[in-house]
Length: 357
Length: 257
Image (cartoon, each protein chain N blue to C red):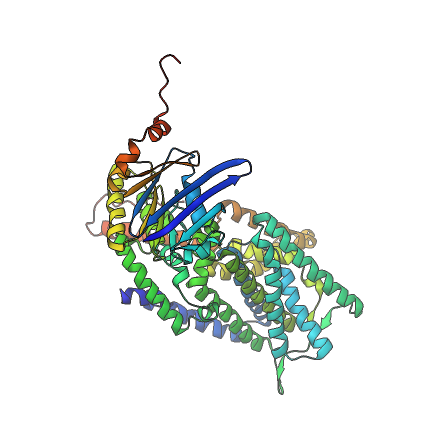
């Protein structure tokens, strides 16, 4: 029994998993050296999105708490950096913990309605967070007469400052890996089980000894902290903060990431983040094949196609990309299982196993 | 020794009296059957004990009044329960359901969980061992990694039992565990309830409609009707009580009526 237990707890137990991890790691480490500057910037954006998507997956995918506060929290983190750098010339080792702290406080405050509200009503209440942050950010920009936002110097230690996209790639990769590690570990321990239990049946969870209020608030705090730190990193990466960047459309994109990736799945958050960030470029490339008189509608096309994809996933594949992946894998496994014994006797009736659509 | 005593419990929803001055107790190692027609208030009694409903009156666990406490606090004090419709976490595995049931016993902090520190690993292994013991007790070991939603109904019921037992309770509340089970599953359930009583020595309050099972297994019966106590005693006493018969079968009309 002891052995079964420990192998359950091993993250990379099987050799196949270890090989897959090693291949992924090598690919991730080599990527910046072969990628064009354009692709590298894209990779960095995906890594930033991964942190926010994981944070939202913890809250919505695990704990079942709906939030429309992602853009507001990203903005709060970014503005923490902007204001502290501009007013106090603070270094990143001050601004990042400050952003994390502010995120935690905002998570606690805007998690409070979740103790009373659920579903759509909760979603609306978290919108308040969005508008408070956007309003305060806009006020700050107006008061300081910053028409183009707050400029931010790159983070630096001594004489080294982080300016190159390759350097940023490795920093963001480390942060995304940390977010991934935290998400995986929370999912497989007491806190993650409590979140998933209260998502499924909160009254039952409570009767089993789970302090539902506490774990709802904890989900908001952890998620908001991660999101706010992602926002702070975003501000440093872009070298400036502007309130225009934190629209409601950004929130919709993050919600789309976890829906398209697959609700409740950590790999789904990664896939969803990559999908949503790369989607506009795919549409742009596809639009290149259109006659040139359609050139000015590419932007509208992007929005429309995004909406269509969201609706298609919600209607046809609620389990998201991970659901599709599991089905493909199951189909291959079934094919192998049925074809292997059939080929051995060499029967004349060796028809192909009925392939499911 | 009295494990739990409910004293003068009343419960109202608006103008509707659900429970009216109900008093009952259950002793260590005793199986108390709570019976009565539909709508008699049986589940409401369990919900008051586990803190989901808040009634008037005292609920004493080993002498200590626990009424008014939150359900999760009451669970921590050693009162576990099953639910009428299973109410399992369908998208979690059998093992995860049991570990969720042990939530109150697992002592890890979120900080150490984030990095799965050695202390977390040790604690997880310890509780997985305990959950595995319970799985073999209910005979579900080979389903440990199956999603509960994918199990047949009869096995889901067992998971519900195991999840309640995972808390290592002193008192177990069973809300109509035989509902939806066929004859042979009921027999298995009966054996299982006796094993819990004999091997684990728990006090149990058991809501049941199957009078044959109740008569065979229960140490004592408590009958409710319209939120009032109709009778208490052994199966023979209670089932021959005219008031109980009237509640179940209806009163006999006088010929001249």
